Length: 240
Figure: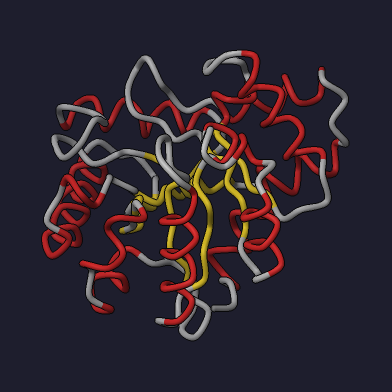
């Protein structure tokens, strides 16, 4: 099955992802080696003019076609809780995915502060007609590394959790790795993405799958998180 990456910093020169077009093409090539043919480009929206994103993605598509990289690139964004109030519905549409009526936004789990702002942002997104995919909750101390009650509430509201591959392989330390494997093992809706940024944070779905198998995560859960879940989110979306 061809894979889709829902959280991937592929656009050059916009945030802490690839600095040059050449680096972007290299990351896309590495993703292709893993069987990934669809990438949602998700720059931090606080670091880029959202109105320019579609043009930037179109330019990257042209460069990839010239380089003969058979990768579909979709226009997305990683939205922090503090971004939500300032973004218009039209701007949220630019970074949202899924079919009409079931569009969803990648909402970043906070690295600092209180979970209250995150919870309020998720509720606001739903009130404005967007579902929520929670980016890397396993890395979030304010969300108790994926164990906070606010996440249980999010799942009950129809949200999905997105775990980072590098978390599963231990790239963020033992605490985050344990949390990532717990999230993959539970019955909650979870997808796995690389959250790739650079050569130092490359696509890593194969390594993450291997590490999850070593940790005795149910193979069906791994396949759902890597192969089926991301495609389903793009095709079927989430309820608001």
